[in-house]
Image (cartoon, rainbow, N blue to C red; front, side, top):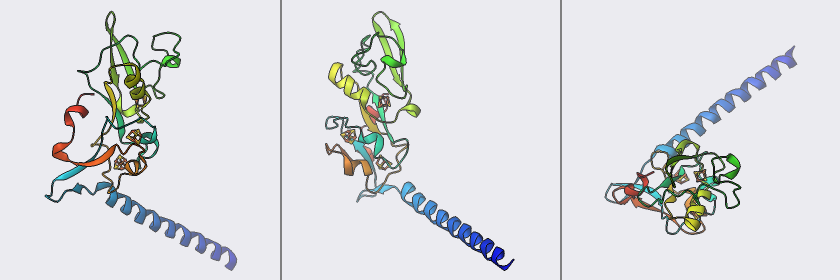
Length: 190
Ligand code: SF4
Ligand code: SF4
Ligand code: SF4
């Protein structure tokens, strides 16, 4: 009986310890996640990708502390050619230029293709489905107008003091910029 009580007490102690550890971890994550980065004048700073430097290596999808990543594909409407053969939508070896999953580049079905009039089609990104893999960006850059690019979405980003992707980016494409200098004209156009 005494052994049984000892086991129960040990289990209770272990549960209490785990609860406390979880509380401390949650507080630590919250403190990091919701702190805002500020520059020397007190203005807010944000992490930003330079699309001209990005080589779509794939790390934006896997290295962000958030899952899914705070990096998303965005689209500049005024640059898009509304192409029927879209390098950002169809796989290189697509058997048909249709919307069948096997003919699409995007692994998550995050790009919606809508017929406008022959031979033009509109492409929209569903941000919630995008994981920031950059496959569509690579295709559009290689075979299209380059209207797709990756960007850190500020309303999703936790604003880490040191962006984990920036540390691992092989192209040095991510930097801190003042909020007032952020490329809103680019990020608003998707
Ligand atoms: S890690 Fe750098 S090069 Fe790779 S996809 Fe992200 S921004 Fe582009
Ligand atoms: S291919 Fe990758 S980056 Fe492009 S929309 Fe799909 S998930 Fe996002
Ligand atoms: S700052 Fe943090 S949350 Fe934002 S993109 Fe970088 S790793 Fe992801």
